[in-house]
Amino acid sequence: MSTKLILTKMQINHEVATNKELLVAAKIENDHLTDLNVISDRQGSLINHVFIGRVDKIAENIHAFFVKFGPNETCYVPYSDAKYAIFTKKLSKKSIAVGDELLIQIVRDPIKTKLAAASTAITLSGQYVVLSSNKKQSGVSKKITGRKREHLSELMKEINDEYPEIGIVARTNAKHVSNEEILKEAHDMAEVFNEMLKTAPYKTRYTCIYKAMPEYLNLIKNSYKGEFDEIITDDKEKFDTITEYMNTFPETLHTPLRFYNDSYPLEKLFSLQREISQALDKVIWLKSGSYLVIEYTEAMTVIDVNSGKNANKDFGDFFLTINLEAAKEIARQLKIRNISGMCMIDFIDMKDPEHKSKLIDTFRELLSKDHITTTLVDMTKLNLVEVTRKKVNRPLIEQVREENA
Image (cartoon, rainbow, N blue to C red; front, side, top):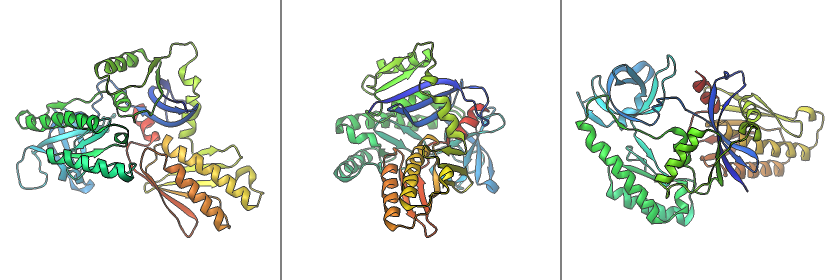
């Protein structure tokens, strides 16, 4: 299997987008798109930077508070985040109060009239571990099972004992490397974390105490070991930045990097325009003539499987074939669209219990290949299949809309 990461700037021609050029990161497996991200490439992006902010306003009606992190810059923070707050100046015994000064990490850049979004749970991500100011966030990725999980649990506890003020989680990538590599990264990152916490009380408000690397470089750095056989980009600036990073930290990235310099556009070589447009559409046509309808609601994502051109055919084996084809495409679309939370899927009804069982088993196996924790909960009495997917990033449609704003 050949797996490539394509990094290119392109215009997305779709009704939810404008003709603005966007930076796209696409994972291609055997010439098929399997993962997609529209990455913030704005000049001066603040994503993952850490600031000392001052609480400016409490808005209990929307369960949030607002923090100034610059003379003219304000961000939105969910009220539930107050329990993670690391204060550099505390004015009262209340969990959060106007005038309190604390650390905040930007999770979304400001867009037009929309404020930046931030969290008080400070997180640093490495290749093998994730460190967090949320001390309860310690353990091992759910993707790691068996003896390796037990072994890494012990290793995480050992590191946790050394750095009790920091939560630490072993990423899926940790199962591929030695204890020494994990410990080195954990110790190096913990030193950065501790230095940040140690010096923060002596810094003035609005100080940026941690600057994250560009989002596209962070995506590459945090990729799973061996996830890509090659990284290809046609953006000279990105190529030079990645090359410099590889030369500076050769032990953290071993994937070959190639600069694409050809008159035939990189996006066309991998049909990215067609794939992205399809991933933003409501309807997805399948080879059998059947189709999916994907709709987003406030509470969940709803996916309906329709027989389409095969509506007059009425035999069980054929419906099973359509449902299996749909299950494969749904598992792919969940990743490409970065759908998270609850998802309800209405497959074509089948009367045969063996067919239902085969569909569920096959679908569960397809979902298990997702790097992000995805769980097939059950099939309800109404024959709806319930799936949950952990939220790690914004849905693709939001990424496109926000980067176009």
